[in-house]
Image (cartoon, rainbow, N blue to C red; front, side, top):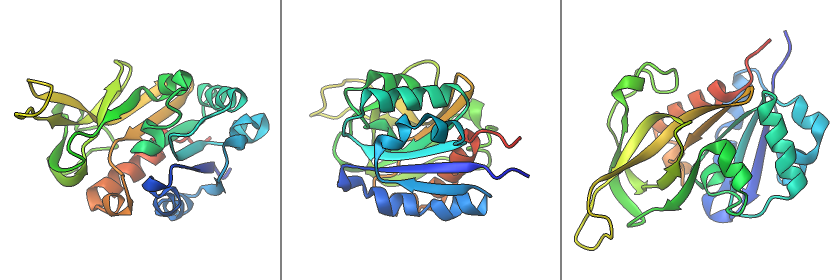
Length: 223
């Protein structure tokens, strides 16, 4: 049986603890049979041979810039079947000027009103049978950043959260936005989750389960 390969790419803004958070999931991938490589640079994306043999990219790289050749390499890899997955700013606030990256992921962070707030995330009833969220409790109550993201219709939204208007908010009606989604892109699969500011959120049993399932869902299927 061929061993699948996973590439963890981490860096960018330190405020999202890219090392500590990704370290939580390296053993998960290894237990699932992946040969895991960790990179602290985006240069690997421009290595065509390395990317072609990668079955899953787990990215935690908040903000920063990506070079044209790196973006091209990542895009081609995903279109050819490499999975791409991540959480919070590591995938949803990466490379703010790289619209090609946002095109692949399908969503982009724009705000977290109120910073750390009590809120709920809920499974969409019509998607409750999806393997990433099947059997999960809903709603899940959290006290952390409640991401407001822009997204497009090609996202298969599995979970949502609702931003409620208040006396000092510039929006006037409840606004429901995605929390977790999957996406097919070329031959590849994409998974994103807005929760995951620090290890504390990622150690929440339900969030850990969602992300674990999402990583495995996004990976290129075993031959």
